[in-house]
Amino acid sequence: MMTSSRLVVALALSALAVAAGCGPQRTSAPVADAAAAATIREGLVAASSAPSVAGEDVVAGSGWASLKGRFVFAGDPGQPAALMIDKDTEVCGKVAKLFDRSLRVDAATKGLADVVVFVRKSSRVKNPVSETPLVFDQKNCEFLSPVFVARVGQPLDIRNSDPVGHNTNIDGTSFNQLIPAGQGTTYKPDTEMGVPKAVTCNIHPWMKAYMILRKDGYVAVSATDGTFEIADLPAGEPLEFQVWHARSTGPSGAVGLQRPDLNWTPKGRFQVTLQADESKDLGTLEVPAGAIGT
Image (cartoon, rainbow, N blue to C red; front, side, top):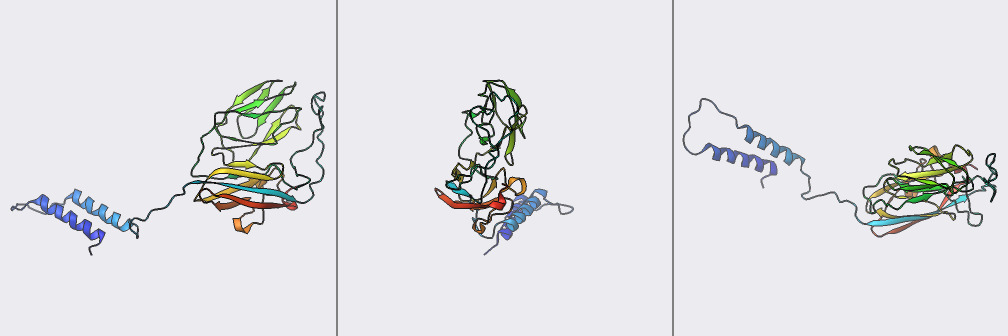
C-alpha cells in the first residue's frame, strides 16, 4: 500500500507531466517548477506530522457538575478577642460588643466558617455575569460579610448603614472611598484576585473583612456549619482548587490537609475530575489545629 508521503510525491509529479504537455519542447536547461516543489514539501511535512492513528482527536470535557464538602476544626479555637473601640463609641459597638471574627468555629459541630474554595483556572463557564448588584454593607462599625465573594464585572452596592461615615478600602483594587452616613455607591470590579484581599476602614481601624473577586464565579465560602458547595463546574476535565483561610498558617493563607486521594498540596491545592451531572461530596475535611493560628 502506498504511504501518504509517496502518494503526495506521485500526485505532484503527475501534475508536472500534465503541465509539460505531450509535444516536443526545446529548452537549454531544466527549469525548476517552484510551485510544484512547494507542494511536495508541504505534503511531506503534513505526512510526517500526521497522528499515528487516523482520525484520533483530543476529547474535550463536556457537561456540568457540582462539588461540596464540610470543613471542621480539630482543635480548641478558644474565645474570640474583644475589639478595642476607641472612636464613635456612641455608634460603634453600641448594639453588641464587637469581637475578632477571623476564626469562627461552631461550638456544637466544630464547623469552620469562612474557608474559601475556588477553581484556579477553568476552561468553560456556564453562567454569564449577573447584572444584579450584590450588597456589601457595614453597620454598627462592622462589615456585615466577614468574607465576601463576587465576580469580575458584577456591580457591587457598597453601602453604609451607620449614622457615621466610613472609608471602605478594598485591597488589590482601585476602590478606596469615603461612604457618607446612610449612603452608598456602586462599584464594578474589573480585576481578578488570586487570593482574598483585606477590606478595611481607615476611620475605624478595627473594621476588617475579606473579599475575593473571580472571573468565572467558581468560588464558595464555608457557612457557619462548615459546609460549602460550588455548582455548574466544568465536567470531564481535571480541575485544580485553591483553599484559603484568613488565619491559616500556610503560605498566603493556604490550608494544607492530609488528603492523598485529592493530591492535596501544602499550598492548599487539590485536584478533582468530575463526571457530567455528578454531585461529588468530599465529606468531612478536618483542618488540624496547627493549620489555623489560634
